[in-house]
Length: 135
Image 1 (cartoon, one colour):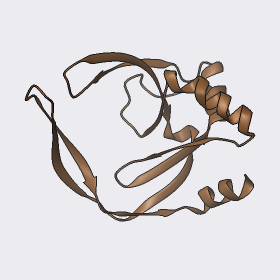
Image 2: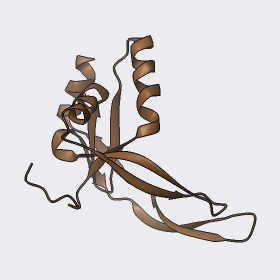
Image 3: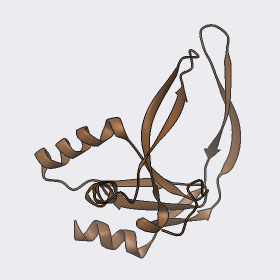
Image 4: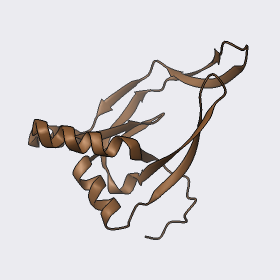
């Protein structure tokens, strides 16, 4: 689709392990699910049905990602990274968040540093309101 396989751009992520439970819940409840992903300064959304269509048509394939637990254990999981251009715009930052350093310390004294967002404001776009109204 014109993008390099390793292109760095906003994506909406769905874990393989979450797909069946989400589809079952949507089917049983009759309520359509939309997945939203918020970034530093913008946000995107996609319906579960549209995501599944992208997977079945081979437009988005799984990526194996390694997750590390606070105890040091690692797990490999399949995830789907849906490029933002397949999604609808959800919102834009009206106030930027601050980047704050943080860490998790496990029972063995291992420290896992990370950065988290603090504060900020996101304004929903007209397109997102229209999607919600259509549901």
